[in-house]
Amino acid sequence: MNPAHPFGFLDEYAKKEIRRASLKAVAIPGYQVPYSSREMPMGRGFGTGGLQLTLALIGEGDTLKVIDQGADDSVNAVNLRSFIELTCPGIHTTTSTTEADLIQSRHRIPEHPLREDQVLVLQVPYPDALVVVEPSEDKRKLLHGEADYSRLLVKLYEDIVQFDEITLSHRYPTRINGHYVIDPSPIPRWDVPKLHHSKALVLLGAGREKKIYAVPPYTTAEPLAFDDIPFRVESFVDEHGTRRTCARCGCDSSFLDEYVDSSSGNAVYCCSDAHWCKQQAEANNE
Amino acid sequence: MNKLLQVTGLSKRYGKGCPRCFECTGPKYETNICAHCGTLVAAHNLSFDLYQGEILGIMGESGSGKSTAVKCLYFDETPCAGSAIFYDPQYHHNTDYASKPYQLFELNKAQQRRLANQRFGMVYQNPHLGLNFDISAGGNIAERLLMADVHHYADIRRRASELLTRTEVSPQRMDECPKNFSGGMQQRVQIAKALVTNPPLLFLDEVTTGLDLSVQAAILDLILEIQQQAKTSMIVVTHDLGVIRLLADRTLVMQHGRIIESGLTDQILEDPQHSYTQRLVASAL
Image 1 (cartoon, each protein chain N blue to C red):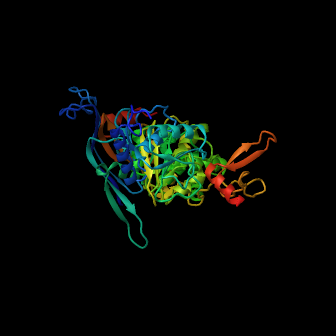
Image 2 (spheres, one colour):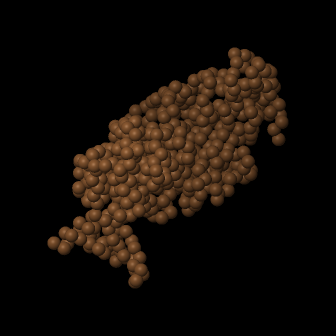
Image 3 (cartoon, rainbow over the protein chains, first blue to last red):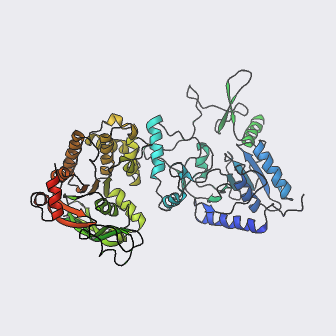
């Protein structure tokens, strides 16, 4: 342990500020609260927003899980986990979704349903859903204030005109508590319904863009859609219309990643959530 | 006749302004730039009424303040003085005409945008101002409907294609970007977009300027047809006497930011009283 920096790397004032911003974010669901994102010993874009939230929230004795694209052992997750272990003595880390008190995640929400006593921190590259239709932040704030998301809907309309369906695969604009539309970080469409009336608190932090926002527990989260063309999640059906299953654990109800098998050249599908896959495989063996 | 719009003392100036701005500008001084502070007095003390189903023409040379007046009413610009009351017509079953008055310049920005989107329509001279060239013609029309909380995809498609048919744009081209369209078609798409929320009031700012004569005639025909079918009130801004003669029931003549003459269009064109109007009418080809 390096005594040159305090517990959690950030100084007390910085942690206090992040906690206050988080409280405000919870009080106004979906509203992007600005905060002074600190310089971290890693590049912005590597999850510094989520990391700062985690460092401000974690305390001695807490159990942490860090996920990158569903896996616990990919580069981003490993580095963030070892950094937090280094700077927060006395915390525990785990790869189990159920054992964790605090889960920091990049691009996925765990398949295992979260509980009320858990907190999910998501790393966000672009916090504002409106950025694709309005470059000026001043005007975006106005549109958010008036809950005018017609231009995002025009975007969806154009998608349907062109491709007969909404082709957004991730960062699906989602309306929180009937007002603010958020960019729920690059989680796939599959994970968006998990935000709706989520039992766990979901905090989203954007380090580069200096914004924190939240989906508090038991809050409505409706993906933008048309009345007659509802929101759909990925179906994972093959050309015969049957649901693909995980090649490792055989699960047919999880979000699947596609790999190319190097020996046969065929596409192989596996659970994206590593802990879920392991759990299912163990259950099958018993 | 039911009154739709009442404008009183509308003024707009660009610049820091001084107490003497208004007394040293205008037709009498043949300028609209204040000699004391250099402020541009774009419009001063404009007062007029508009009735339901009526087309009001605003005529004048470039820089006379015609567009400024319309931009203020459509909330593109904020006027520095004056008031405007919009009597929003309400139709209920089995009841007579009723209207809900709005003090246009006292509303907050959100209310203004709602009104501009749902109750007013605007057609600009330059289609780039009224249309988003990055999205399809149908998408442009959909935007206004979505802003008005119509969230049914099939309804939006049907309504957009209805409007395009009515403005004589082939609905087959609905999913094309307006940048591939001819100038006349862009103008028709703009009109379709303006009409999609069935606004009782439509502003037309130099809609036919820059189009060739046959297209001009077709657009003017379309505007008259809309006015006769939907009884939409319109304010038509133009410097073209032919447009005024064809469309407008009543006309205001503006010069240097002031209204110098107003009355029935026939009267103004046949028997102009003001010397500027006389010159204008005499110079028409």
